[in-house]
Image (cartoon, rainbow over all chains, first blue to last red; front, side, top):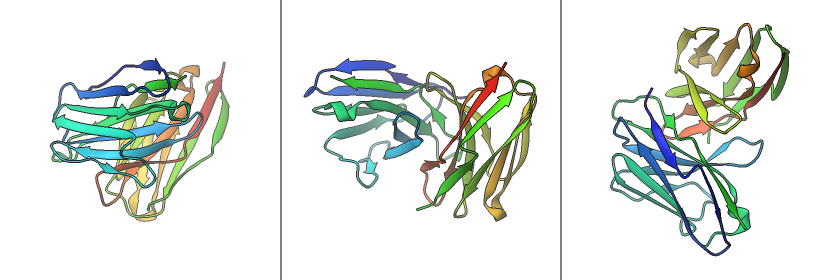
Length: 116
Length: 108
């Protein structure tokens, strides 16, 4: 299957700082990328959908100024958690899909963020 | 929005046993996938199955789109099958909505 690479796998940052997470599709063009958040022992919650070259669409209740998403190319999307606080600590997972081909979605390995 | 419920929420099996996991969804869907989330959090694609039946080794899946459910069968379970199983659906837009998950533990 296709490969989606997400970096870093884990990160610890201080309160008030910003953290950037990268999501790359390595062997296909991802017209659409998705960002999810997962709390312990819970399901994945969709945060936002990003399409290459356009603004991300955020789900209800997700602060777009807190979670900045950029999808500058067909192979790269980034999520920046700005002015991080301990409550932002979570597992973040990206997903990529080529909706033109209507293929399945592939997921990155996830990023475990801890804000201290 | 569409609701995706999975059952059972938790399942404990003895190695070698068979099991069936169910995914119910509240509206028509364009796509459906099954995933296994390993202990490190990685989501492994199991099946891309908006309709019909597919098999891959000890795993198989069936989606009956008209009745709004999908089933994942695990035969001769192994300890490495332990983890959380999710179904995720696409309905109307391109975004995947995840089910509530089934946490499986296979005992040696």
